[in-house]
Length: 433
Image 1 (cartoon, rainbow, N blue to C red):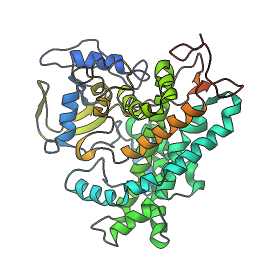
Image 2 (cartoon, rainbow, N blue to C red):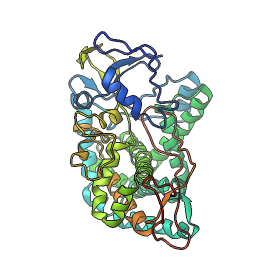
Image 3 (cartoon, helix red, strand yellow):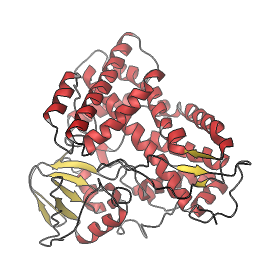
Image 4 (cartoon, rainbow, N blue to C red):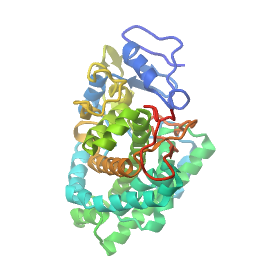
């Protein structure tokens, strides 16, 4: 059960549980309930103070004097001794890098990464992304159906990040599994035996990152790892080798799972709201706005964390020093005080880009531009080549049980087998008429 507080009020019988249904698949109805009735409350089950209104979430994210980011990738479920040992045995040496670092270390590291992660490097990936998209559609177009997550949307961001960082293609399966392991390990609630297995996998994943750093020290190439080493210029005070490995580790999870979830959420929501899909088919210029609205409407990151450095008051509720805070980005993105009619998908919403899905302030996601580019190119390719695509009837979408990352594990779609023309007789929700 959850103890909830709004001033002195309580909400007996309320449950906050993103690990289970129905909140696991669709947390937004409960998020609305929280904004209205308990905008700040203590969730005993996880030991976090939960914050759900836009202005409160934004204020905490931007207030670096009173709130720390050091807990952002601390496992939500305490580690058992066997998991700790598995990390130690595997050579785990992850250090605070970007999202989980505070000033002045964060400022120093981010400045170095920005030098390496240039707009030119992102733009240079566009032809690669387009080629991957078209190659995938070529493979399944004549089938008339596909699981888009399995056949395109899960692999695409992974391959892009592999190329960006400089990992060899043959390491792709191990690295993709490592990213999934990290989500369940850090943001999930695994049993001890599962947690120990995940810990061993994560240690192995970190070792791959460290090995790439060592390889690029000897044989630099045109990739982000080599560029970070050039910025380092042999100076551990600028960037240590373990810090660079930790940056690679963070980039892969941030650039893979979040983006693949964004792509899956985009397809689901646009095909459910058939009129929106038809509009981007007719006018691809609307895709840029559609991406921002999907980020607001169905974010792939629905919560993030902070820690109070001292006693604070949020929305009239006193939060003690050292309190762990869970900031509901997904709830903030539906706050009616900021977004008119927030439960309506509006791909021409003028202020959609005010969403908090990438965070805000000095910790705003460095990969936001890359994720937006991948989403734009994906929707351009699929709406152009498969305009009649619709969701396969009768499917239920499954999501990893965790508190932060929200994306479908499978998205089954279909289209006219005779060709890529529009599906005749479809309803606005993408189902057959």
